Image 1 (cartoon, rainbow, N blue to C red):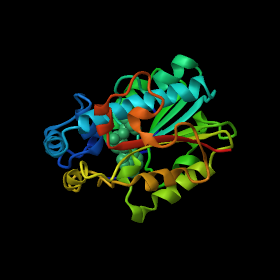
Image 2: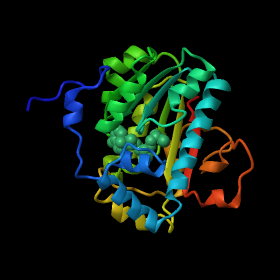
Image 3: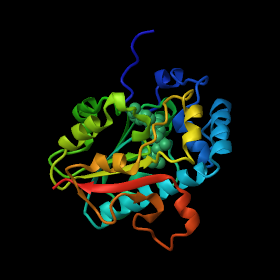
Length: 273
Ligand SMILES: C[S@@+](CC[C@H](N)C(=O)[O-])C[C@H]1O[C@@H](n2cnc3c(N)ncnc32)[C@H](O)[C@@H]1O
């Protein structure tokens, strides 16, 4: 087969559908299953169920991650005046997606979604078809320069203005040998002062270590990291209060309960000064 056409243009493309791999559990579709979505297949559900058997709080973690993302985007749009969002590792569309939260604050807010999962692209492109300030495109976090230089991305995002780079629930799919810190440095290097980096990341905690075996047969391995390792992604940036904390503790909308602290994932926001 010829090389597939670029999938960064709008519209569902046949080559994307042809590339759907239904034999390997997809980390995007497993996440959709944790969130109660319907965009997953038997192979994903079996792997996700294995994860849940080993760590029953994982679906709760997934929901906490979505809540964190919603709070962060609202904070950045409302309190910090950010109008451009580059969301890498987008996930399947669910409720209160980044563009919906940001465009509630300002309908002109611009959002680029980048993911390397075929089904994510199909759904995101369908959802965004009528939205002129957004773009969903195929791309790989492991090649950050390609994302920054992509003409479609640059058609939506003006890199002379601040950008929020969202890396939520995705850096824990990037093994150390692929240099996740270098990837973040490249992305932060590509945006102007006044831009933000948002990271959420699973913790290397005894509760989660048993799930890594299931992810070894999925589309990407789960790479758990310690708090100092996760905080290291913000080196050189000013951390927004309250710093890098368990997800429910990041500017919560209401009281945080002890049960919430079973979320073994950290999140934070850093500002490029
Ligand atoms: C756990 S979901 C997180 C979705 C969303 N960011 C959120 O926080 O709710 C992780 C997403 O990252 C994507 N992903 C994993 N590795 C990636 C890579 N190397 N490049 C781009 N996307 C990737 C997966 O396809 C999946 O959609």
